[in-house]
Length: 159
Image (tube, rainbow, N blue to C red; front, side):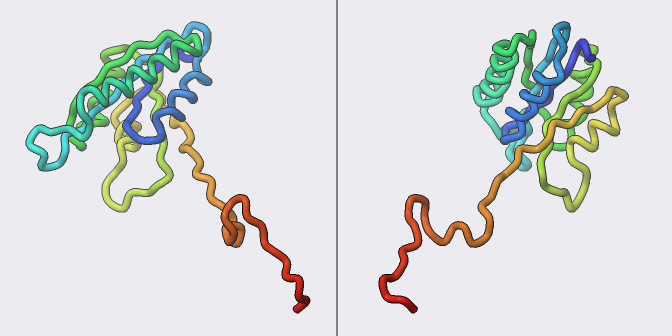
């Protein structure tokens, strides 16, 4: 389908889901380029949210998972302000001549401003594929009255 996919990952739980989604989207001729944009902390005077090693580790793990699945992959890490993350992703997609951009998704809504995904869609002429958000399974109400391994004991005295 696409010969060159740009996979943008971040430091949260959407990264592994986006990698799995890119593996599923890849054809035998697809090459994936993994990008991680490390954000500067607001008011951090040049400090980033992650260390260089943490950001490189996220890209290395994604490239290793893609390679283990038989998908050729490369990766890079960039640094930008919170307002420049989408610009950096789109610029890297243009530089690498990607056919599509794959992003992770979160299950929360923004009250003010647009998220990175909305800005990437607005800025890029390429198709933007959004990996589904990881599901968070919760217990049904009333099922967690008793801890795991314990049962409700019946009283010997009828009530």
